[in-house]
Image (cartoon, rainbow, N blue to C red; front, side, top):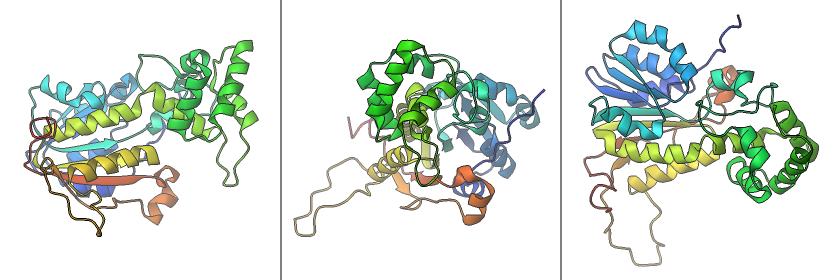
Amino acid sequence: MTSQPVHIPVLLAEVVRDMAVRDGETVVDGTFGAGGYSRALLDSAAIHLYAIDRDPAAHERAKPLIAAYAPRLSLLEGCFGDMQALLAAKGVAKVDAIVLDIGVSSPQIDNPERGFSFRFDGPLDMRMGDTGPTAADVVNNAEEDDLANILYRYGEERLSRRVARAIVLRRAEKKFERTSELADVIRSCVPKSKDGIDPATRSFQGLRIHVNDELGELERALDAAERLLAPGGRLCVVTFHSLEDRLVKEFMRERSGNVPGPSRHMPGKADTGPAPTFRLFSKSGTGPGAEEQARNSRARSARLRTAIRTEAPAWDQGEAA
């Protein structure tokens, strides 16, 4: 029997600090994964925590943790973008804090059978749950232009058209089934970079984000958090690449009213928009320190952004309607 992959929560101390949970509060960990944040938050105060995960494997791993923290930990199966409906089914309309750790978890990426990584040979799957099209379905059936757009938009692969063309030529001879097959094709047409990053990195990222609708899921989750959080509630989001971080940064800046103003040479514009629904904890967010980066290489690109809920109504519940 193989041992479980070790998951090291990123920016854990900073998340616990910004969440600042207090006894009696209702808290949401929207991306349970291996339970690192959930455990730390449950240990920090007498809260009731609702954790969410779409991955059946996460629910199996969570059984000992649920037993240890009963009845303060409830694990809900579903997508974190649907958190408002999932919580409503439990009779919860408002919460005091929400944390989201965006992206793939270590138990997922380190398991070859999940097909997330080009470092291991495994089925070309990449699904965080167990429903919907796999990565193999996408690369074997998508139109060449659509495939190129996926790799460019979500993977930021500059040679996306070259990669898409190589994939289409290869699948005409034999359909893709394994991660190693796809990685080899990508490496055959994308030169090695000077920084040592594997040529398959960006394309695998793009496919994973597309297969799981990760950016759409994040957008839905941010909107849901705005509706769910009580005044004074904290929203903490940890991201790992520029696409996610840009989306979170723009949402928080917009909802806090902290957007670029008119030129100093032009008259000011009247403030007629909706009242800010969040207050930024910090404008630039928080990154990992040198010690954490040395201890956990996956932390290097991480960024934590935190915002505090104001008393203003959600933008889609009145003023912005």
